Amino acid sequence: MRGLRFKINEIQEDFVQNYSGKDNVNYGCSMRGAWRALQCMKNDVAIVIHGPKGCNNEFKLDYEDTIAKTYCTEMTENDVITGGLGKLEKLIFDLDKRPDISLIVILTTCTSELIGEDIDTLLQNLKNKTTKKCFVLHTSGISGMVQSDGHNMVISNLIKKYTSKNNEKIKNSINYIGYSWPFDHRAGRDMHELNRILDELGIKLNGVYTSNLGFSEIKEASRASLNVVRCPGSAYGTINFMKENFNIPYLKLPIPVGLKNTTDFFSKLIDYFGLGNEKKQILRSYEEFVCQKLSLYKEILKSKKACVAVGANRTLYLVEALLELELEVKVISFYRIHETIGDSVVKIAGKTFENLERLRQRYNLDCEVLVYSDSKQFYDSIKKNAVDIVFDVHTNRKMIHNMGIAFSESMDVEQPYHFYYGFLSLAETLTKELNQPFYKKYKEFCR
Image 1 (cartoon, helix red, strand yellow):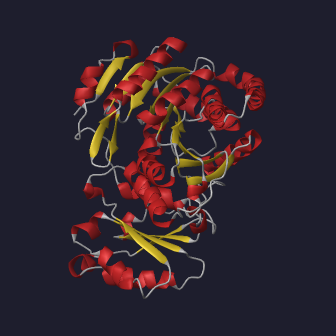
Image 2 (image 1 turned 180 degrees about the horizontal axis):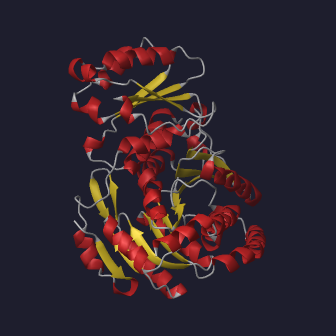
Image 3 (image 1 turned 90 degrees about the vertical axis):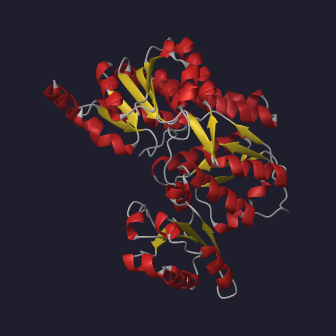
């Protein structure tokens, strides 16, 4: 089914709301989301994929010894017929002998779920035979869940099972929930800046869920005095549970991409904790520094045409950051305009379009808006609008390159891009991408 295509000032909200139902929501594999949330934890956590080795091929970002490792039972055709619980039991016993492992998390696949592998009963029977904490998450794609459900299952189960209820609260402290990159790799390096700026403001970062967490840190989650939501789809179960059981309120803050969103993010925390205008002066100093450094990048990036293609939650924050860099955003493509919360579809188009209208008025934005577009619509739109660079998921990199257009990842980014220094990093990355000789030569060839 073809997607929707509008000019920004001609969006038919009612039509979009009615268009999207379960058939059009961008489902995926919740196992991927669960794995993403686990792989950035410390190496005392072991991830076990119970399924064929093909399910494990994509999940091999074992950066170094400090990061959680992934294991697989590598079920074969014979295991599908006779059962694969024997392989799983052996792997659990092998991991249980490892002194460096504290927690084993098993992820199911379509194969193990289709043949009815009773992992819950297996773990119950092994309870008195093993010493390590162990639980299973039913994450198969046939369950009809999305990637964010996998994130949510991991975070909420860790908190529910292992966080202590009797921890004393730390004054002016936060948990950042719904972020999953190892601190010292790729975009995960943003978290070092988050920790540093919060420290300057007098706010304690209790934990990033689930980045760089070990089993012992999970127990301390209830010490925070506030939960800050990074990704609502990944955090909904956790924040509600912690509010009810640990009396920890939560805030949904802007995704801190770009100058305005970053300052709003920290300003709202300063206001929440009542830290005063002195702390906001620290933010103004950062803004002045970044503005000075950005001037050269803006000269190069000004009037370059961009397309942004991500989910509704992040799109508009990234659009605003690009507009601050004086790029012209000509195409906005929403992979989804609805979210899934468990088994239900939540329509968020109205709020998204309200925010989009505010951006249109503030920046005099003139662009096309795609919703659930297919490849041809997407291709036609970026060609028609003479786009210079596309922000998209890495799986579309080859298609964009083949069009002779510069490409930057919008999700699994290689470099930091949050907060103040991350914004400078983003500007530098864009400048390099747009000035690659390859793109210029290929674009001339395509003509």
